Length: 194
Image: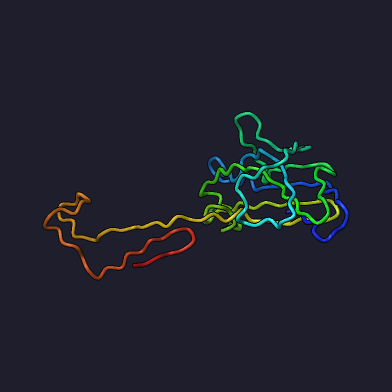
């Protein structure tokens, strides 16, 4: 979001680049976070943008000046992918906001979180992912931004600890449940005991 809310003049946005996490070198094949972007555009509005805005807004299309893209079938091994725009790619009217909009393809793999040093956790739309982005403008500086938070559907895990007499992993009639056991579920970011 680019603000021109308190001005009486239009503002021309300076040279801008957007970078996204792309590749981390882990064996055997590496791990990919964001592998490409598309659908670049923008819109301006007098109302401050919020998380409740449409997920696919009506936008004026933008053509990047430069854009890193994978070559052929290879994803490429650049740590970041970058998209750049020349000065004046957006003109923000006085008293309005401009929103730069694009689609980023998330090619998340668990190795990204576990093999990155230091691990980058909790910024992407998938809990535990690390999809950071950065917006940089000439003369303004850079600002890091996490991926948007998405609601996570609730999940239920259930089961029974039982005496599996015939060792077939199925609780058959006559195989009683066992009381007094602590069951621990371990994950990359937390441990739950019940």
